[in-house]
Image 1: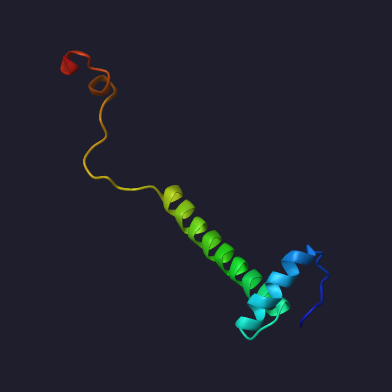
Image 2: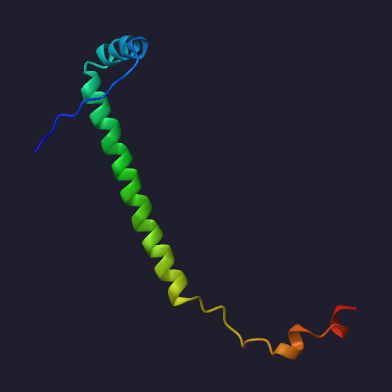
Length: 80
């Protein structure tokens, strides 16, 4: 289902957009529709990737080995 919207643009910008749209065999409305669809698609991909990354972080990572003891982490003699 399509819905019309009203957008206010500068006259000089509209003139330039008409030239660009004509060179692409489309309309300003068509160009806006395509660009807005791309923005929504990129946002959906970003949100999906973010959900996956956050789920991975929540699960944690197995780095192997044993956890270091507190004493080992704070051993200043080993740093000298």
